[in-house]
Length: 80
Image (cartoon, rainbow, N blue to C red; front, side):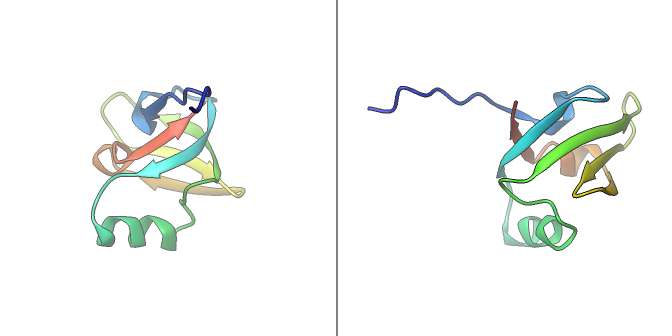
């Protein structure tokens, strides 16, 4: 039995400056491919650079700034 409990949360719940590891991407093959193509993939470290209320998020992955709409960011689950 695995004794490690992993708590996954949607990326949109993180605040500016918080860093997490991408654990899972929910969505179809098209969504996953689009995110993988811009460098967002399970196992990578992601940081919230900016988040504006209900607006888009700006994240840092591999020293690259990426702007994500909240709908897309809600499909990315992270582990703190």
